[in-house]
Image 1 (cartoon, rainbow, N blue to C red):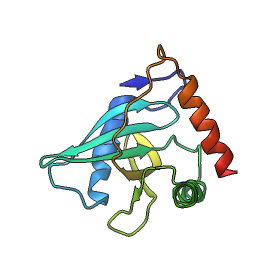
Image 2: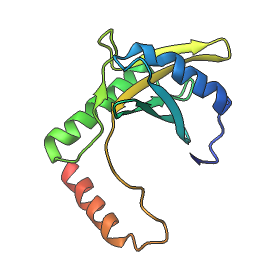
Image 3: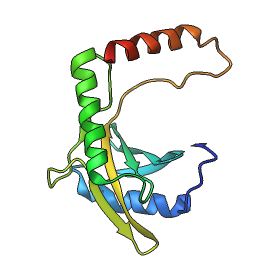
Length: 145
């Protein structure tokens, strides 16, 4: 699991309990489970199930963004992929049709949650020469403008 120095008011175990409690909001296999893989401004969970299912659940930090702001971010990601070809994660609607879900537990105030289709990839190694990937990223950013 990757962590950062950004403070979080919720304990990782409580966030994991919230993530697991939220899984019923999407059309997932009944044995789906969530494992915390990153804790920064949001908590990111890998959702897996027998049969190879994988998706990503993002649990937003409490009070950081409104549901409307998150919806705008999701729209921007969709447009970015459509207009530039940059591969972005595809959000998955809940069983109620909404992309942004909200749930709290007795231990955690309500938070927004978004499920994404899983994208294969690798995290860059900070010890590698990253000049070429950052040059490519700069070109993609320029095309997006």
